Length: 255
Ligand code: 6PG
Image (tube, rainbow, N blue to C red; front, side, top):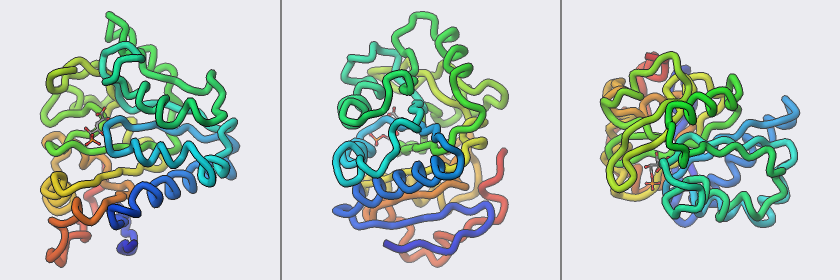
């Protein structure tokens, strides 16, 4: 594991071997949650969907990591959801429930899923915005090869949202209808943890961290002030770039 010294406004980048990634990410998240609970008494943790976090959640669900998380002090939220029922295989809630939530003693009333199945997506988004705390303590994010994060897709309406905190959004088929948190929620989160693995993400990682700040075109750049956990294949585009981890001082600032 290695990482550069953190600079103001710059991402903190931690690199891992693929075989170490899930355990390292689970430990990192657990430490952030534990520290928040120690300082604040509770932790609002927002989970990400996608395939990357699944092995991380699997490890957070079992000893020894599961035992170190004060689950009764954790409130679970979600960064985005497909507009499907919660038992649909495409549901982010279903994935998180199966991998993590059903295995740990988090009170059911502390799990706040996005109600993607509601026909009135506007109302579902407004209701979820009311549920969200003013600031998430720990926000987990993934990244697509096109640079999307949560369901903030390049050049979509949602990436230009500056007031609303949750909005209906459009993504690719086969599940185009989504609900997503907006850039202000990412900006306001206390700790943002981005997880990226796999060589197919290498170009996107390089673009996110090397190329000038343009989050409406490459939405993961809304998370540049976060901690990026990357495996070596996904970091391949950073190698050989002396400046790969050097960001302009204002790179992580809000738009
Ligand atoms: C989702 C996500 C999305 C995801 C990326 C990466 O609902 O799918 O929240 O933003 O994090 O698409 O997904 P993978 O981890 O599957 O590559």
